[in-house]
Length: 409
Image (cartoon, rainbow, N blue to C red):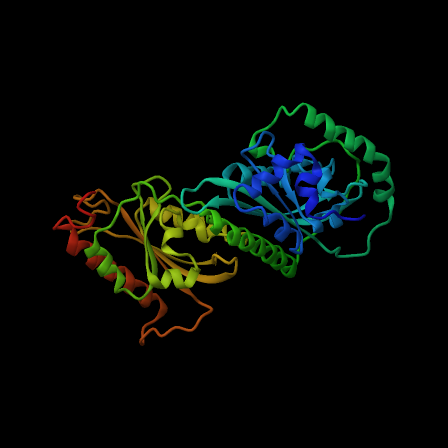
């Protein structure tokens, strides 16, 4: 099926589709659509601020993969790709990720325009304003998953042709009566197209890498244009408003510590990062402007162990230190084996909550086990604990004088 060019996303679609294109052009530039059209891969962008959480951009690759030209999907909810045989548990996982505004990867059975089912790796990523944390768009990349064995026949394909008309009619009814416009229902509402079944497919590492690479290139393109309007795009929600401003004396002391670490404030909601070391920004690719106000889950990704995260949470709740191995992710989407130590920072009285500043610190020390390090004769564990000790000395030395925070605080 022939695909359409940039005109499909602008005035060539008529006034009705112009407002969907403006969701991007108003925030980035008038040329962003042409740049996105040149990017490889199958992907779409949705705007949760518009009624029904509609698709505001669809790539050429998406048209080639699904048979839907951009003009066929702009303004519609992404649920049109789902069908009766789409796994409900998978759908629930996608729904929860959208509601929580967090990234998500899942193998899911989608349907082409002609009704034929096909397995894709769905890579979902929310896009935020880096400075104020405003949710801008959702990015959804679709990577086809290669079959593990020979296809079982053309039954699903022929059945799909008979159901295509019904499916289109069901989609039109959903648009005429958008009773469920909550952002959490994007990608998930299913019609009753077909009774086909497909053996689940498991995405390969190369397909996962392709999804991440495609997402990275899209975010990079959006960032290139967002700089023209002063809008910096981030896939992680950060909000530095309301976090305590550390004193210059404490920053100076912390700045001498060589290890990669962050400090979080356990008193504030979501335990935001209030300090990040130079080594941490070098390791992760996040600047301090991007990382302050974020939760440490900013480094989590599709392969991060939920069991390990729960272990960390239990130790934090019990005010105990822990050391774990965790798969973490840099800003560019690349992963690394993170030897992580999390520890509460207590004052001289032995309490985690500091009397004068009312700030409860936790230190998170990160060590990339895949990189070469000069531990100066120490073991990795002692190297991690060295950062904890140095931070404790800095905090205790300043807590007595009340100079942990800026005077205005």
